[in-house]
Amino acid sequence: MVNKSNFFYASDLAQLYNISKQTLIFYDKKDLFKPDYVDSNGYRMYSLKQFFILGIILDLKTMGFHLNDIKNFFEHRTPDDTLSLLNKQLHKLTKQIELTTKLCDNIKSKINTINIYNDCKLNEITLSYREEEYFLVSEQIPLSLPQKERFLAAATLLNSAVDQNGLKEYSISGFIFNETITDFSPKSYKVFCKTNKKRHNYIKPYGLYLQICVNTNFADAVNTAKPLLTNFCKALNLKTNNIIYIKTLRNYWSTDSHDNFISKIEVPVL
Image (cartoon, one colour):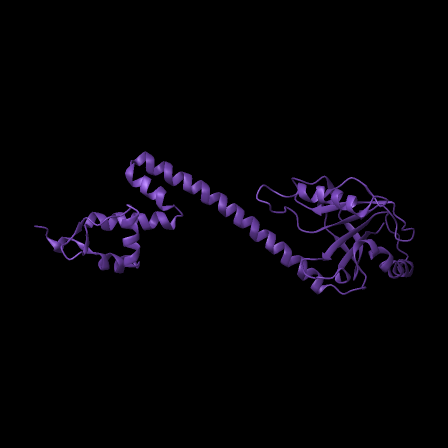
């Protein structure tokens, strides 16, 4: 006759592990964890060994293992098998951590960009030194091309900065014009995206830059800011280089209307 005092009832295990009795019934139906003994009244009884086995099952579940994997583990359990199983899961979780970290960085980048244009004062010129930045830059894109073809040329560059998980490995994107402010009449432009030191093909150098934010898209940004920049340079007797960087700060991420776009112009001072 079975000595019931040496067994745990389902309610005992449920209380000890803070799970429901339905979980134990579910594990039984899945042939994962069956009671060692069922008495004449239908009460499920579990041995001391099963107390520890259930703890391992719950640990493995917390580690992210599927029930079928856990079942296979208990059917073929050796020290080597245990090490192999845990090492594989460790590798999988490490990859998930890397992906989560990238997702967090991507979100932080979006937040940072939004904070930049929230803090910027439209049509106000600043003159300050800027650190060098690393860009991925496209080939020249002629303005004579139809808009769709120009967009596709830009999209090719931006897609090259997407990793295997579909995450964009850049923060701010924008445009480069090899023109001066005073004689701005471009025939083409380049698209850039800010990237890291390993992936760049262009360095925006450290130096003194004129900066201004305007409430328009990149195509109209320079002409909108031209009178302000020209007067500012004359007043301070400044000469600018023949290159203009335009960063898109506010875009369809945070506005429904093209009219609400904000562009930031940066022009190096000689």
